[in-house]
Amino acid sequence: MSLLSLLACSLLALPALVAGSPLPPPLSYFRRNPITRREINDATVRRELGPLLSNGTLMYGPEQTAFDTMTERWNRFVEPDVRVVVVPFVESDVAKIVRYCNENSIDFLVKNRGHGFTTSLNSFSGLQINMERLAGITISEDKTTVLLQGGVYAGPVIEALWDEGYITTTGSAACVGVLGPSLGGGHGRHEGLYGLVSDTILHFNVVLADGTAVGVNATSNEDLFWALQGAGHNFAIVTSIVKTIYPRQSPTWYTHSFVFSQDKLETIFELLNEFHTSDNGTLPPLMGATYSSFAMNPSFSETEAVISVGFDYNGPAEEALAMIQPFTEIESLQESGRDVTFPEISGVAAGSCGGADYILSSAMLLEYNITTERLLYNHFNEKVAANPELGATAFLLHEGYATAGIKAIDPASTAYGHREENFIMLFETIVPEGSDLAEPATQWAKESVDIWNAGQPDRLPSTYVNYATGNEWETVESVYGHEEWRLQRLVDLKAKYDPLNRFRYYVPIEASP
Ligand SMILES: Cc1cc2nc3c(=O)[nH]c(=O)nc-3n(C[C@H](O)[C@H](O)[C@H](O)COP(=O)(O)OP(=O)(O)OC[C@H]3O[C@@H](n4cnc5c(N)ncnc54)[C@H](O)[C@@H]3O)c2cc1C
Ligand SMILES: *[C@@H]1O[C@H](CO)[C@@H](O)[C@H](O)[C@H]1NC(C)=O
Ligand SMILES: *[C@@H]1O[C@H](CO)[C@@H](O)[C@H](O)[C@H]1NC(C)=O
Ligand SMILES: *[C@@H]1O[C@H](CO)[C@@H](O)[C@H](O)[C@H]1NC(C)=O
Ligand SMILES: *[C@@H]1O[C@H](CO)[C@@H](O)[C@H](O)[C@H]1NC(C)=O
Image (cartoon, rainbow, N blue to C red; front, side, top):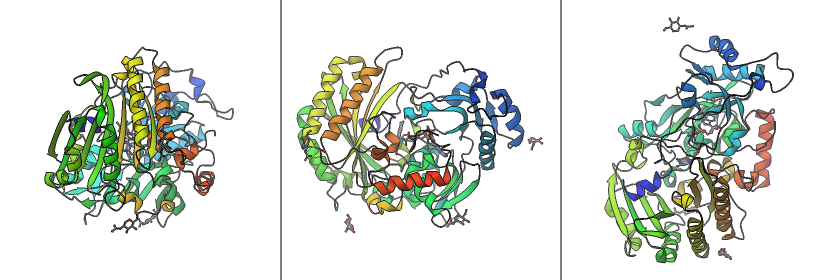
């Protein structure tokens, strides 16, 4: 596996999930308020709800072995209190489940691919709706759109389209759902051309908080259409979408990666700043992304992190190599490149989706502050020396997507509040099982974000909703946008579409019911 794909998939290439469900609390747990008609437990839910739903719907209680698989998550620090799992088989089941929950004061939460890593999910207790059987992918006859059901994930969508010579905007990693990322915008390698994952959604079929099923698009429930494109986790359950597809640009992508020693840091980040403004102020749209990281690699040094830089180009090697020539002129420790298909670069074949005790933090930037990057790099080495167990898995990732497609869209036209940003930063480390290193890991995570934000003293901090971690330093404004009107509009739409705040677990706009 090349370093670049390691980088792009570094979040994935980890050990398989190990289930670990705590013992369930007493059965009266579902009774959130005194008007609940009577005691409800998971067996009751299954007995009563089962007959209302389509043949093919599955239900699991904690005593069943499959329950552990149904509730496992990428980040094991995220442990919503799931009392019963329902797996709808047809889209119309979803509305019935929500209505049943409402009638019985049961809270509900959608899980699709389980990569959502915000600890805000830990405030949940109730019935989990697993979307995996709603996995339909249907390309329209005229090959302009695809109908995706709410439980699809990137890998099968990328493959199904690629086989026909098409692509659509998805997140970068094959394991991750399509709706999860898109409800918060969704960043990926095609955004330089076509914008966010949400920017190419033409129509949503959703179930609202009160259990009604409605269609949402630019002419029907258009205010909700606005909200679903960037703040959608707070508003509805999506059972299917219609999304634009595009003929692929090239039969292959070209991926090239370097490993540099730390003395090249200033040169590299200055070049990255230039590269990311080289085409009318952005990265050339066909250069899907640059991924740059600081991480330990003992084959180069036991004490100094190396700097890895990768480029993913939507076209032939010669074109890409001409563009990245300034980087090839810097002396590197290692360098490699190859042609790949789009499914390959997305990690479709990677198999395992990983799972561990992750501590993360993130920031968004307009440009790289060279002084700051040096400070961060030194800070990283110091932290590795002080916390070698965390240092072994820690990295600071700098994601630089091509942004022309995002910036071509009026920022007021969707709820996504960060169209001006150019870079997404991520700190990640794994806390070894059974260790007490969560606290120093969180401290490291916070300090990294603080250093990044201090590098843009004239700007307010921003957090990409899908990289939000649930830590108190992430304000609602930093996540959903600093414009007052934008937040007010979201609050007003919550009052209209979800007055009881049923959707409040994934990075809530408003925390309490
Ligand atoms: C390894 C890894 C790689 C990532 N890569 C990218 C990337 O390239 N680009 C990017 O933008 N983000 C990326 N992310 C972040 C990603 O967008 C979020 O983690 C996202 O929430 C994952 O969706 P999911 O279906 O996998 O997870 P889940 O945890 O199942 O879903 C997360 C939340 O989305 C909501 N949700 C999901 N499906 C539906 C639905 N059908 N209807 C209503 N609500 C729904 C629910 O609120 C749920 O809590 C990555 C995360 C990880 C861990
Ligand atoms: C469920 O499916 C089985 C097998 O197809 C069928 O015999 C049964 O009648 C179905 N039940 C309902 C309620 O549709
Ligand atoms: C918009 O949604 C409505 C309601 O579902 C539907 O009737 C209409 O066909 C949709 N329009 C488009 C352009 O998808
Ligand atoms: C350059 O970018 C601006 C917006 O930043 C846009 O209005 C303009 O059309 C772009 N020009 C070209 C040639 O793409
Ligand atoms: C760069 O970051 C440093 C602190 O890390 C800060 O003092 C300086 O003002 C920043 N430069 C710019 C141009 O914002």
